[in-house]
Amino acid sequence: MTPTVRDVLQGVAVVCATPISPEVGPEFAASRRGMAGMLATLAAAEAERSAAATLAENADIRSLFAAAGTYDASEQLAAAARETDDDRTTPALDAANARLRRRLIALHEQVEEAGDAETDRAIKALYVRMAAGRRLAMPGG
Image 1 (cartoon, rainbow, N blue to C red):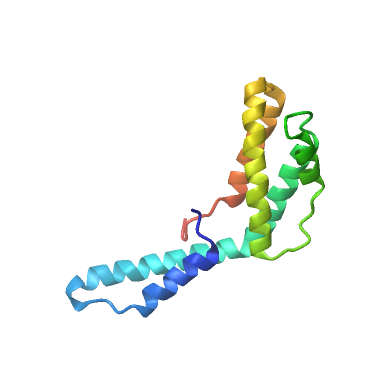
Image 2: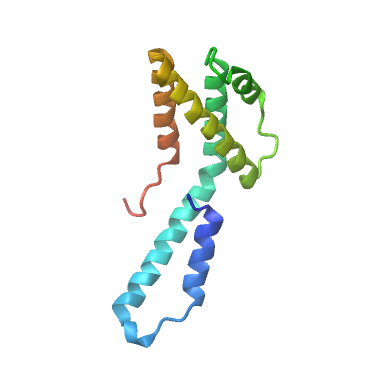
C-alpha cells in the first residue's frame, strides 16, 4: 500500500495527539517529534505537486496506449487512451492513475512476451519519467 498524503498527515496528527510515556526518555521523544516533522514536510511537498505529477503520468500512459499497436486488449487500450481527467480531485486522479498503471503493467507483460523491443523501450522510458516525477527530496538535502 502506498499511503496518501491524507494517511501520512493523519498519522502525524495521531503522533502529536498521543502522549509519550515518561519512561521512554527524552531521546525517544525527540526522535518521534523529528520523524513526525519530516513526514509532515514530505507530505507537504507531495501535496504541492502530486496533482500535476499524476496528470502528467496519466497523459503519458494514455499517449503510450494510443501508440501501442495491436495487443490482446487493444480495444481497451484505445478506450483508455481516449479517457480524460475531468475530475481533478486527488482521489479521482489517483483512481484513474491506478487503473492506467494496471493496464500498463498488463500491456508490458504482453510486449515482453511478444518480443516487441521498441514498445518495451518506450514503456521502460515511461517508468523512468514516472519515477522522476514522483521523486521527493529529503529536507535539507
